[in-house]
Image (tube, rainbow, N blue to C red; front, side):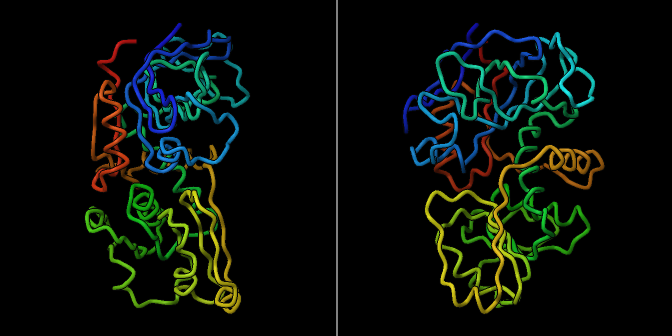
Length: 318
């Protein structure tokens, strides 16, 4: 078995290429991919070669952890320990990546026309979500960032910042303040306002959620905190973070890192979407055929107006 996939041969060298697939095991399902999303955070680091040495890291690799497809072949062994119904052929599913290649690393492995994945990793999603299903991983990441409470300031108005703001409102919280320094990203607020740090005089924020990815931002955020406040680092930071100790000491500042989403976060997000408390509309701004993947990745990484680029695999050969 083989399939077409986005293959990052080495940093900066990306192409659509055929890669080998492992044979499905009894607990595996085969997925025909419809859409996959491009992450401008972690996947950019893979593209530039700045990604830290995570387990499974290496080139050539297949990126992608935001994938929606349909079940082409069901598992013959259905007991995955999660007490859920086996997936039926044709079911629409979300796949948070795959490691199914014989001649490429799967980090994160979801940007391919066909995938072989353990059924336990695949999540059925409502048919009406369609292409918006690629966003559920980011929505779950946003939900995970709220584990310690709802922020009253969000720094960054990309897709993750927008989802965190929408979740604050979906959970019944007050509309947070949102900072964004790029004028092309200040639009699209839904129930909250967007400004920049220079226009905001407040210095009493109790919980600040940073999704900017700016490794030099901590000192400025500490200066905006109330005593006993918390900074949640929900972005991904390629450089070392540091801060001046005396101002943080005077405020008894707390700093928390929000890492990978958990199954409970995804379940919460899907419930909120189903109840229409959370909308995923208006977040996918760009679309490209999978055959144009190199150009799509360049635009996703280089165009500030591109909030979320997705690849459409439906017309690409298996």
